[in-house]
Length: 169
Image (cartoon, rainbow, N blue to C red; front, side):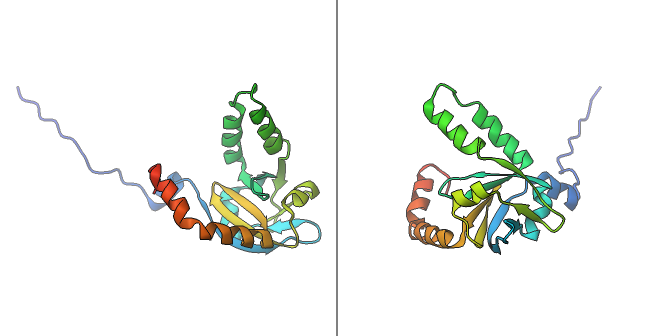
């Protein structure tokens, strides 16, 4: 008796909507906005759907603010929570990063409220830049962002070389 086995190697049929949903969102781009007198900041409409209604805003590095969707925040805090408590650097970073975090509800027109202490930390004036950095948004004072951006643009080749050494580029 002979058996014949057939293997179907064709890829499964997936609709465009299904394939798009399987891809994790990515925040990219640079947007200039105004922080209104009530400390409300409008989020780019392009990002609103992916971000959800509740965001976490916290102190970031390089004197900017980091903004995370709740799901990404959970991933970050799970990793940070596994760092050794016995190390002073870990405790200090946790205090810096987690104690400065606040929940921000996105209002009906796509704005969040930036608390005074975070506005002061980042030196935000009325003109700000929102930079999409993969899984987070960074909020910068516009002048500070322009200065920072000029410095990293001048070092782009060197940064690319270092990334090439570790196999990223």
